[in-house]
Image 1 (cartoon, rainbow, N blue to C red):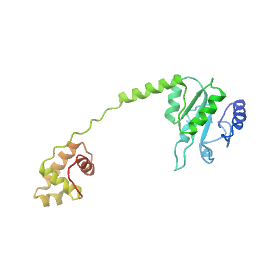
Image 2 (image 1 turned 180 degrees about the horizontal axis):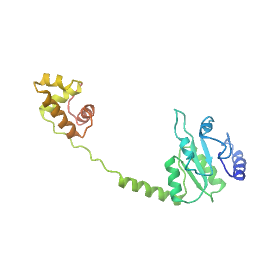
Image 3 (image 1 turned 180 degrees about the vertical axis):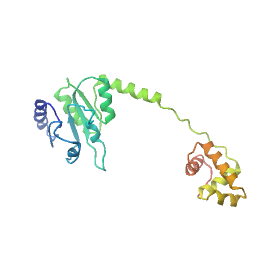
Length: 212
């Protein structure tokens, strides 16, 4: 626990010690501990009673260096939509308001430990609206239709799949290197592919017989 409010911190310590399935492994004031010190202690859930933009507490709750991330829960919060969304963006998975009861807090810790997220019902709608808005603003990438490759293009892509260079392909197909390069450019454009390997994978996905 990282609590600025000492009375709240001591009350929560007494509360959790009465629960046999909850173990307190450490507690301190919010300004007494740094993220690096926190990561040295093994625990699952971090309780915090303030959200600081200078040090978003939940950022340390993400996976770092292969370690198992812990989960951050903010308690005693205001029903402020901007603050709530900022906390969610930083990785907080629990957000409890000032009027939350002791039972609410215990239930939230257990839920977060199980991998669930917790937030007040009135702020859930805010999260839904935010996600819907983000989806509306995200451009939809339409699937590329099945490419209608000519026999020559298919022959060329078989050689591309084998890793041949443009010069080697030109020699095998009796074409100029310029013609081969032009064919490949058109195929990449047709498939909306950024590389030769991506073009090969796309063509195979559409059922063309191209083996390396």
